[in-house]
Amino acid sequence: MIEAMKNLAKSKDVCVLATASGEKPHCSLMAYTTDDECSEIYMVTYRSTRKFKNLTENPFVSLLIDTREEHKGSPLSEVKAMTISGVFERLEGELERKMVRQRLLKKHPHLKVFMDDPVSELIRVRIHSFLLLQGFTEAHFVEIAR
Image 1 (cartoon, rainbow, N blue to C red):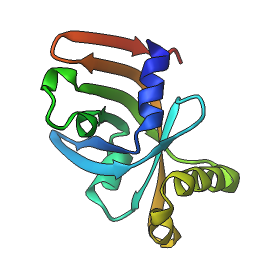
Image 2: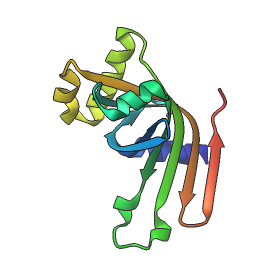
Image 3: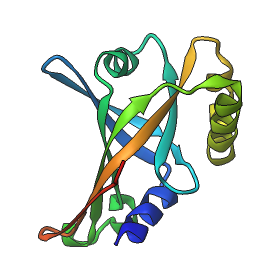
Image 4: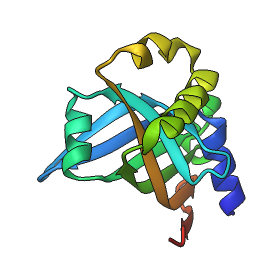
């Protein structure tokens, strides 16, 4: 099941990122990509955003990836929805930033101008768990050993 979860994450390119500051949650629609092993997810944002402020105050995040676009007009019971729990970690060094930038640009070339802006920040989320819901009743949970 873990490979199916990772394949779903790798096959999509947009997720909802949930962050929190204090008791106030915040959700953002984000373009993303993964590393080859699907142990990390990469995104980009401006440092001035609420999401980035939240990430620096509380690094625990949740992401939602789903298949609703593939099932337009179908019953909701056919939709898959996956929640990924993880932790925001800053990228270490220029080599890591260059690798993440290349991965993001390969999947999202339209982000180049955004990433070239000196006030943008690359985001890494280290995955801790996957929860895949298939329809209304079938659920699969996998925690990643650290």
